[in-house]
Image (cartoon, rainbow over all chains, first blue to last red; front, side):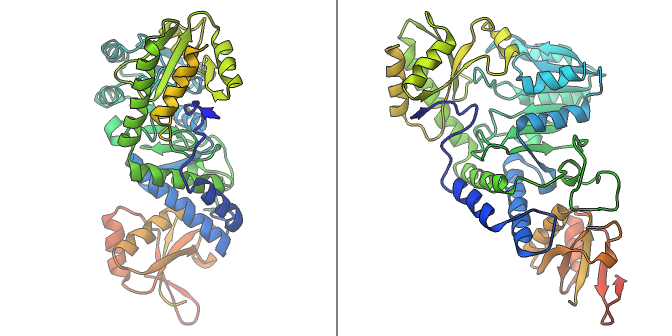
Length: 366
Length: 81
């Protein structure tokens, strides 16, 4: 099977991920619930994951909050910053994980930058929109549909200058683009564990530059006499039992990334995307969305085939891609592909040029 | 167990403190805080055997906030130090 849907979930994981999950299932229970060996092993393992994530994203272990996924992390950040009916600035390339929580809050949303691959347009739109009184700016670092890298460092600088909190959606960048709280000038970095960080599904991280408010309330294994959630991170926003096996698997993924470096991983994936685009470009029946500032995510359209039909043709050949709107209708509207959708191909560090050449060959035959 | 008990409001803070002390060459480990010194219930502490003053300096330098430091007396009572 050829798997090219890594922007949804990475399928091939580094050696060690499965073993760490299995070890946790066999030897660990829950953190903060006891002083016995199984609980102690779990506590040490979860803390190690906080250290690894802190190392990668420029944070102290206490600033690393575990979530179910990036959506959960984004909801935490957004609910902490945006009051009902508040004003928010977002890019024209946001995922529904950003748009829907804001819609639920009936936020007044300004969409800044709707031209695909136009960095200057995007920056000037944010420059105009970020004003005092804005509750928050939320921006993805990489479009999940088009792989376009948005200039979050410059947007973060604008936010800092104007005293507006900044949330970066790192769903497509964590693990393959260097990012820290400081370099982005961000208050929160939200990310999944199961994509570029190579962890299992059901894991996510919120890196906190400020204290978020809880979404759910309950036991933390600490300060039990308090009727309220503790003020301290991470306990404040980690009620209930942790996904210890998932977090242990995530540690193995993080160790792999720290060893290889996000720069090297990102460079390899981007090179594969370039190779793919140049290989398919000569085939007139495909439209390829590709720009120089792009990660290993590429959208394509077939001149004659509906995007879902193309994906079905590929699935019939045991090739996994994702078609449709990718939970990002805003991004498709911005790019002018809302009516048609696209087929998204997303490469992994574990792909080779031969894998890509085979995919291009198959696409040529369809 | 003889020695000093630095109490913390969260397990993660205690783990961070223990790691910091380990790097400074001060041996210790994280444990659940004895109920007698855990006023708000379910607390965590770092138990070290010696050098409480140096430990305080190391933690303060890293901006790691502990709650209190206790010494257990031979008769079992707890004394804040």
